[in-house]
Amino acid sequence: MPTRKTKLTGKQKAAILMIALGTDVSATVFKQFTEQEVEDMTLEISNARKIDAETKAQVIDEFFQTALAQEYISQGGIGYAKQILEKALGSDEANKVIQRLTSTLQVKPFDFMRKSDPQQILNFIQNEHPQTIALVLSYLDPDQAGAVLSALSVEQQANVARRIAQMDRTSPETITQVERILEKKISNSSVNEDYTQIGGISSIVSVLNGVDRTTERNILEKLETHDPDLAEEIKKRMFVFEDIVVLDDRAIQRVIRESENEDLILAMRTASDEVKDLLFKNMSERMAASFKEEMEYMGPVRLHDVEEAQTKIVNTIRKLEDAGEIVIARGKGDDVIV
Image (tube, rainbow, N blue to C red):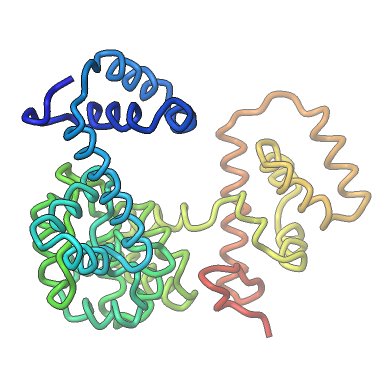
């Protein structure tokens, strides 16, 4: 095992910590490891020979500071953690702890904003370039990002949504630069050195699922004008067949009436038991019995046909919602039937 004068790797530090903790505690920690991590740690511990007291103390102290910093971050964010650590350790040592923590635990960029109210975030970013707004929203929790997106001007909403959907990879330098601009009154946070995968269709779908229906419709209508293919792809993912469980009984009964029996039977072929039970519950006993019998004796069918049937039913659901005849629960309960 390297001496204290040699820079230790993360695995070597972990091995020293396991040895210092003793067999009982280490055995408990090992239960949380993956198989590969167990192999790696076993090898490192096996290679360890004599560890001097100073090296052991440094590793334990580093672990303690990191754990303490993580606790501070969970309480009030990176800015709060850095402020507390600076008082205890000094500025230089605090920066080292925060940098070590954010790189090893992959604390996400813009963490300081996750502790903020959506209105506060809006005040931070509403006058920024749409690409900057899209970058920030891509890192926020979907509900939080949805609330901010809803509060943007009508002109900004579709523009930002399109940029999130089309976003691929952003360099750490760009992210850091944007963070520094937005964190004028909050301590700078570090980012992972690897290029980070953000944005994309899944990201904007998660965000749109957190906005109100009016905002969603406005964004999609504008996207249909500027980029119809993107709008269609987003709509396909906004509500899938399994999401039928969010509908109330009245809405499900309406969907059943508006759908072809053949499509319903095919769509239920790969559905979860929860979806099947919900649909059967909202059918007449005779209809449910007929469906169950037909499904039992149905031969093999193409997955493509099943997916096509599910798409037809999803389209029916969206048409009924657009007409105001059913409500799809979304966001934080803004859609209420009165």
